[in-house]
Image (tube, rainbow, N blue to C red):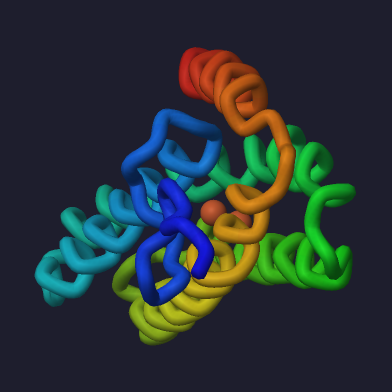
Length: 163
Ligand SMILES: [Fe+2]
Ligand SMILES: [Fe+2]
């Protein structure tokens, strides 16, 4: 029987315990989920909805950028199926396309809520794949997740400062 693996739950989901590159990504996912819930609760209050949506878009864009610039390229060679990485990139592109559409709409627009809901569902699906397939596979590999984590931390601070 193999020993339990640090940072992977018995169900195979990546957990937020060890100090590595995966943990801050999981924390971002939780924050995004929380913001989508706040958006749901703000129904009818257009000013509040706009403010929460802007926060969601800003956070997601930074998160996707550090994954695309650092985590995805660094992990590509360590995962069995590069198609999984390509799929993740395509999902990011779809989410960004939807955010570009939302950026040009007022929250009073009849399609604003629909687009935020679809964005939330897309992100849910994407996060599920990252946390149950992609990230656990990275943690099982010989990838230097600590070094990658440091790079991502620096880049995130730069992107936040520029925002
Ligand atoms: Fe992610
Ligand atoms: Fe992602």
